[in-house]
Amino acid sequence: MADPRIPIKNQYLAAVLAYLVPGAGHLYQGRMFKGTLYLVCILGTYLAGLYMSQWKAVYYRMDAGNRNIAFFAQAGVGMFAIPAYVQAKRYAKQHEVDAESELPLSAEFHGVLVKSEDEVDEIVGRIELAEHAGDFGQEVRGKFTGKSVSEDGQTQPLELNLAYQIDIGLKVGPGAGRGIQSDVVDADGNRDGWIRGVIPRSFVNHFAAPLQSDDQGELSGELGKFFELAKIFTWIAGLLNILAVWDAFEGPAYGYGDEEESTDEAKKDSPGEAAAATQSDEVAPPADKAAAAEEPVV
Amino acid sequence: MFPLLAVQVNVLWYLFPLAAVISLVYSASRYELTERILQRAGRLFVTIVVFMAIVLVILLLLSRWL
Image 1 (cartoon, chains in turn green, blue):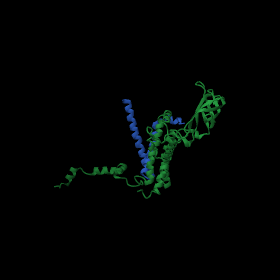
Image 2 (cartoon, chains in turn red, purple):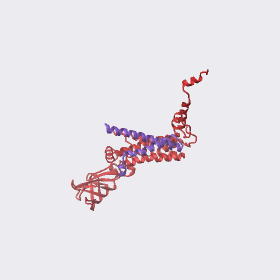
Image 3 (cartoon, one colour):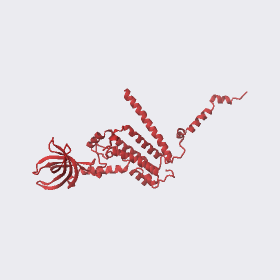
Image 4 (cartoon, chains in turn yellow, blue):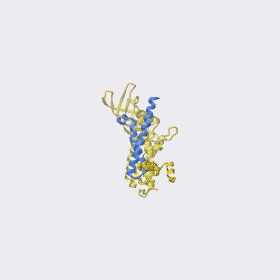
């Protein structure tokens, strides 16, 4: 039972708000100091962890062999745990959907043009893909319009026809870049090299998306121990929010804070009382002296 | 993407904000009175840092001698 001086209001609503956004439950209750403290400390730690991990530390993945058990610690902050769960469901579902269903596609592209092993140019521009009727039914074709950047920094306009083997990365996945690869064909339709690069993936499609083994290895290689540290930040923040949720629901665990502390605590905390106790020990006479004092004086 | 300054900082320095956050949130979940929360949090922060420092010294000595 919470102290009557604490405005719990609707404790269920406060707990839900506190779970979704750290501190929100307390702000709803009018406990401004604690609400702000939880918001800054817990949300700050969580966001710091996310930022350090390039927004990839929190994801839900429970398939055999790749379980992210740490998610249950991170899930203490609902505003990130719920999207991670939703993204995992979207990620799993998209395997059943053919990438061609997204066509026609038009997006910014940057990557490389590979003519041969020795001839690789950086290219930047726009890629457009669409389905067309071919000799053997519907086929995907498109074009790249942009510029190539040579090793010495010189640029020149470039237009490429894309056909045959076109692979597009998953729509929902980790990272702001979505991989794409396509064959390049000349005017006669003969294969003339290939391009490989990335097109943008929207925030909605990459935030809290489940990391795959390759992504984890890549991140660990890039960030090293900071990736682990980032995950620890999010775990701790998630676990701390459980305390905040309970505080919003039931009030502080030990009381308002102006009560007398328990006897053991009081001895530890108030040196005055401890000193008084010591003094009283010193004042008390030893047992033999006390007995002697009780003997009648002749 | 990851700030260069952050990578250059030793991981150990991240302990201080983390310990401060843990101390503040834990103490806030125990009491309502602001002064009491801050007083308790300060004490807990010092305890955590001292404890970690002792562990660090022990590990340093072990790594030097073993």
